[in-house]
Length: 620
Image 1 (tube, rainbow, N blue to C red):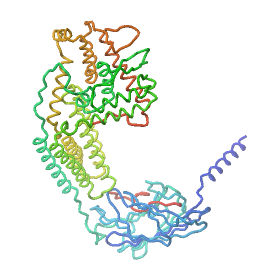
Image 2 (tube, one colour):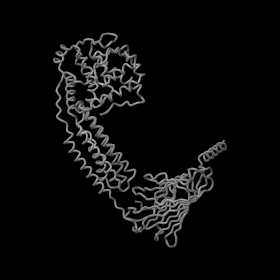
Image 3 (cartoon, one colour):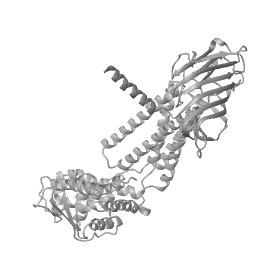
Image 4 (cartoon, one colour):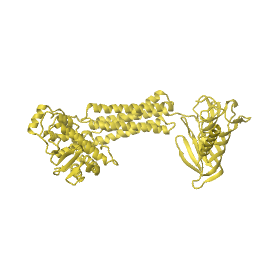
């Protein structure tokens, strides 16, 4: 039994070995390095590969970034065609071979290039710390050999050769130092994928006598960027104070709806969006005008019957009314018919027509203020770019992109929240406005924390620098994004209409009972006349509760199982209508379209894989 089990295990291991074996292997990898006094290297690689199946050739990945230090790779040559794929923030990647032909069997590749490290930014000592073989090779290498030619003698006791998986400090292979102390030759056998071979030579400080000293411009560049961002913020603030401050808002309670505005237009002016609830309000508006009736035959079973055309010249009303009944037979339309129709496209068109109505003499924004606020947005973008570049000026790459994303995200988030606050400031509750400020604060804190945690360990300029730059990377763009919105100013027309809307909202929400009873005496259908505007302002329940103890005349436009004279029923009806008609019917056949509302050092023997260079390679 035991022998049978061992046999099965042997067959299984053999099968897996065959399954996962590469169809090529590196017979040998030979590297010759000529080290110069400016800490640059002339590299020659000789690679022998045995392809057991046809391949186009091999590829190489050579690191060009080591920590915060960028390395220059130049003068790349080879004995076969080179296809340069990319130079990312961390690696230069290229292929050797031809896309038009394949090779098999033993193939030799010779590569030459210059590898310039320059100032290692270590004031204690100089070093040659290089991965003869990096951890990125994707097939075994049977034999590795190397020769490193140094410009001056080195201390033999400060030469270390390590190998194995990344981080290993174990001795691997062997090496010999020439009598003059200027040449190191060595070799190692059987390196497998994921293993590296690293040579480290420590020299006295100043060994690389021709190195051009590295000058870090990060601090001065950051100071300049912050000063520019500060100046931009001051100027944007002055523009806001001069052009963007709204006129004194003086709403007066009024008992009639705003002049010549439909509920949908009132909704757009009140919160800056045309949403589906605004469209629901139009059903009640047309019903009150005697243009249609609403039949509720069962739970969420509605039928709308056309009585007459609306007496209006407004495009959005005429188009929407016609589109509603076009979903049926022209006179009647049911909820199920709406669900199966293309009514959502007509709704989107009506939304666009509402926005188009407020142009020319009915323009809602002050033109001069609109032009001035563009400056704040451009200043915000400028501050993001300058601070991201300044923070990463010595190693512009992926880190720069990260900071650009953080800065522009702050700019956009603050601008977005400001736009919503600006739209609802006069018509919304303190809680809703406070909640938006809370979301803004949480977003800013998250962005600051992310920027600081990313910057502090990566850049090494100290905690204070990281705190300051992370803070201002969020604060300046955010402030300027906020100003870019609030510098916009209402036109005189918009000011007048918004005052009327707020005044009418005050009436709906706060009218006293004595005044309400007097108005009902002169207009028994007052509740129904106001209902569509109460719906669009989100006050339908408040309005209905005022009539809780008042007997209502039954509306001629509602057909149900029994007469209903309860105001609370009609506020509940508006909720059912919104859910059934505008949410279910519209969304059910608008899944392919938009559902959104429209909106106005090392000092040791080193370790395997820890040095410059090396990288990896494989076949393609």
